[in-house]
Length: 640
Image (cartoon, rainbow, N blue to C red):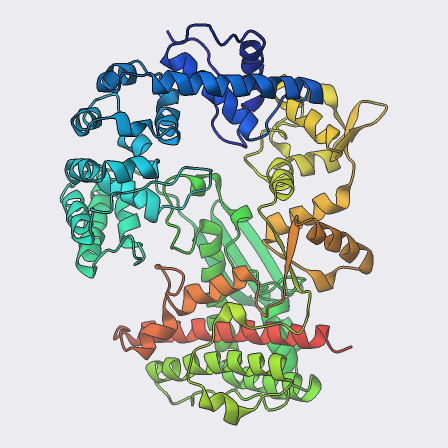
């Protein structure tokens, strides 16, 4: 049985404290003339990695850290001498004695010291087929892959999981730190195509990887032909059909219902029971609205297309995802579509349909309401002069409607872009240019509009420890499952320090030392500086916050967080997340699972179903409404 050893996993690993306690004993007793085997050497290298990343025990003072650093320098010398003196023609013996957690760093050291050049081609070929060697550990080292290019290529051509390695590097979305994988330059595109095709010949292929093939994006490093993609689609359908035919899955039923009700006092009533989500709107409330501007505002106030900060509420939000949605492989080229997002998407589409039916019942139509809003609110009241928006006739077919409204939406973006940049909308100038505009680049009238989180360690720490459902700090007796995160726990309960378990106290102590938390005279844990933490929480829940919706005192705090690079600012019409949402609907510039509503109708690759054309038209109307709401918000915010 292997003894407990020091292991370095990554910079943010929560086991660092325990590993450093083990390292402390080794450092205190280290002597360079001591005899070490391969696993002892790799353990010393793991200790060095903690110091390379400036990770220390809290109890160490600066003098202890300085002394330990001197010891680590001696350790690196010991490691180097050991690897330089290895008999590389007998390297397989050393490999067979490696403990599992040291496989990866073994090859890292060989690369860093350039001792891979001491390995003969024949020996390396034997290493590749050794049962104790994992090719993924070798592929993490660029120079080794380059040196043994042909040997690794030949191995990958016959290795059954090469497709999965390629997809892991080029297509899979990773949420944790990982090493890049490198592939031989001699492995050409036709080789990759053959490897993937062979993988798809196996009916037992992993459906997660098959789906990654389906959603893969063309790049210089990885390309999947349409023929291979179709082969993957057919295999995926077959695997999933067999899965459910054999009753291996668990089916969950969800039902969404929307209706208009007479004699309902409240404008909006929501009920949710056993997967049945029901929304009813008051006919009396709708009948009471007499002007078209109020009727248009139903999309923001009644249907909740946007929230109190005029952020689009229909986007995907990671904070709304179920725990199960984080399981399995995810493509980095697809728009995430969790259960909550699909529910919001379905309901918003149904709201368009049911509202259109209501308007027809009172001899109006949605297009006339939108047109009146543009003319009376945006142009007349808010002085957005020269704005033009054309609608198809009521007699037009659904196909004709889609083909007209899609370019109108794009032209709306161009007009607003011109208004912000030039102060006016000049149609003759806009008509000269036929180049499409990138949605994410359309500017805002506000210099400071959106506030985002960054990859700054302080932001990540607060977000993950205070708000993430995966944090281990909020599960505390006697509150158990009452709250979803540490922030909710601490602002709602008086939590005594001693209620935390020993494995939690280490992180709580750090948060106290770093002045995020404090302990009062009754030993109760309190949030010390709540405002920055609150703002980061708002970003966690909503992906972004709107600078203009905060009072001056809070804006000062935001500015300080931006100055310290904890947060960052954006000044576009749409937030990054809203821009992603529009791209998901309109084109495949970002997401391979896009609905592609604009491009497929422009290029004639749409289907023949009139019903489908009707759905597409309603979705484009929804996007148009959202843009108009965002423009109205910009104009009202910047009027004074």
